[in-house]
Image (cartoon, rainbow, N blue to C red; front, side):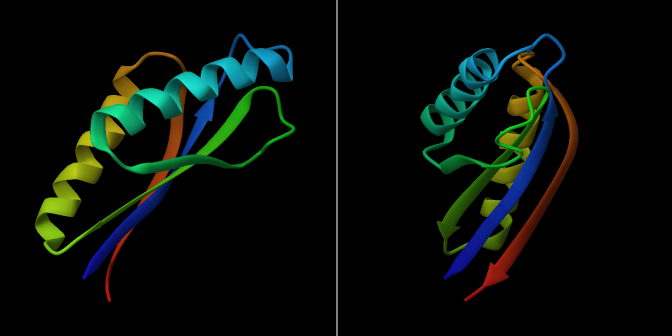
Length: 95
C-alpha cells in the first residue's frame, strides 16, 4: 500500500474577511475533491484572511500513479485561478 499526501499554501489577494476566504477555500476544495476523488481539507492558517493551507491525500498501490495524480492535482489547483499558490509540498510513503 502506498500513501501520497501533501500541503498547498495559497495567497488570497482580495479577501478581507473570513467569509470571503471561506468561499474561495470551499470552491478550491470542492473542485479538487470532485476532479480527483481525493481527501482534501483546510489544514492551517484558519484565522488569517489572505492565506489558506489546504492538505490532500491519496491511497493506492502504485507509487508512480500516485505521483502523477498529485502532480495533476497541484497543476489544477494552480490553474483554477481562484488564488495564487505560493508553496506546495508532497510526500509518498510505502506502508
